[in-house]
Length: 90
Image 1 (tube, one colour):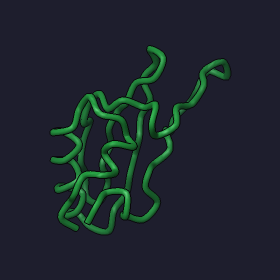
Image 2: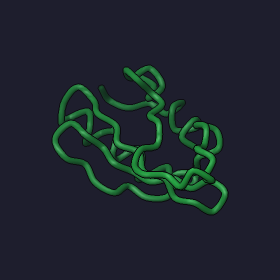
Image 3: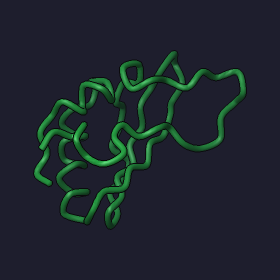
């Protein structure tokens, strides 16, 4: 299954933002780092206009989370939108 076919993909950046920062769209956010995978949640960061944004994405179970985390780690430097076109074992 393609990542873009997972429920609620693409995720939106989370956390506290400075009001002057523009939130990136999925075709603007460039994957920077896989932060962690815990239970059914994958956390990664992406950059846009020199700022870092954090994404927390929940999937159906820990197996899918582990598979997604591996795909994220292999696709650092691509956009969140490009990641959506990649296959993941779900």
